[in-house]
Length: 634
Image (cartoon, rainbow, N blue to C red; front, top):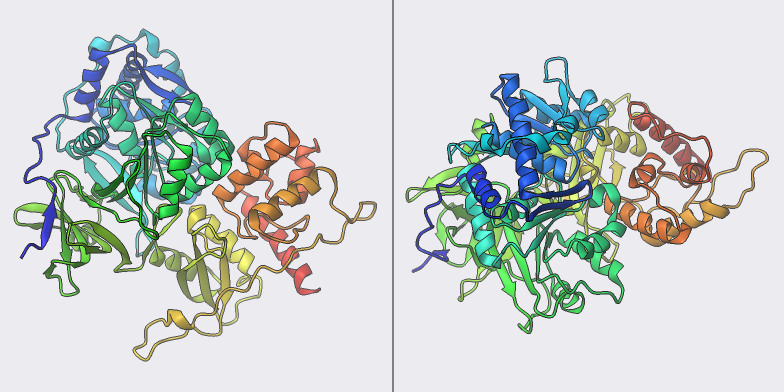
């Protein structure tokens, strides 16, 4: 009886490193475009010069440890990534949208001995660096002078099994884990991608996710190791209004994102199309037949739709390809069959191999090297089977007679929020550590937005003697916002006298009450001399919020994020406001002024600077408590 599956009995021998593969493309077509980004365009020759200059800078420091990168989403980030690799050092990408405390942890935990940044992110880099950590170095001057660099000094030698990067994922114990991946494994994943999708120098691969997310690794290096151009698009910094135009302007042919971002994209297209897109690859969340139909409506006539399944620890594991005209059954799209060089073993609850259903165990020579400095989690997830490395994904699947895999959910408490892997235990640990909280639990629920999204809800038992302010929902969410990325902050936090338990003493998730519906918000009393009604710019902002958040009304002092908003919904607000007001509005302004009144005053030209990063959470918390008190007093 066959209990395992792989698409090929053997993987090609891949000894090439990232640096050698990139150098081969530089030599082959130095003047072809390599990167098309918001912060500029670079040919292969120019990108190589940038990387060589950065490598020289890093060698001059005398350090040999990892290189942390807090840079723009574009030429700057890719140049510093390649520069670190040329210097023989792994890179650690830091996401500028993450809280400073989380970035500081990654900087320290990774053992980074260098920190490269740029003019845009310099202030954040300085706030993240600790006294014991490396001082930030601005890469901009180095890149500005890179045109004079002699490419004869371009380094290509590297150990294929050396660590290429560390990517941090959510940790169940409250501590993020750094996944160590080798040059050999990155090249394997890129080559698989190139071969599967027939990527050539004529292609343009979109890079939509943060460089701290493994999607960006595949998208970037599949371009740079094939002679194609990578097209980073900063949707978190510039908004979704920028996405469709950037895809079209840069001629993106291979589109790759989470289903959430994809659905926002196609919703923004209206009757428009992106005819040059020949591959739509989605991953990180559940994919449905409707997503396929939207692809056939808005993309090129020959566009292939692909549902991809993978993990940071392995990259892509399986894919399901639907060429034009292929029948699509209603409901959830399967995750398909394993890629070349990857074997999928299904394990039952007792850890025995199953022919039809169980936990996905990925078996391959190209499984990650493990978790940085985390022996126990590494031992729990990584192993060997029949002489090859394995990774237990924690995902459940069913295998059909034809070998096609269908995703069934998780075997543990890990969930996907907007495509990001989230351990509920990490959020619970952060919640329980707050001063006013005695016990905490976090669950994932289907959001009532009609967009198929998953949302987080927190439950707390206040500590005996804690002040109402310390256990206040808005205060708790503001405190979590200083510790966790926005997608990990629960939409609602419900206070309970005690957590419900099953007869065996475990948390009874079914007995947890649903969070209360957001009450219709009304404008708070206005100060003397001001009108009670929202008008002008404030009225435009309020209407936009109501549309995006599906609320009947919002108040002048209500906070966008307290009303259930998140970064992708803010991107929709951004798109609508720019169109309605007929002006360019930086996304950062919307995040800096998250209330109707504050944003209206700022956009109307009032002398209202963006909130200071250090005091922002405290100020937001105070406004939230005031708004909560007003609502409670009605």
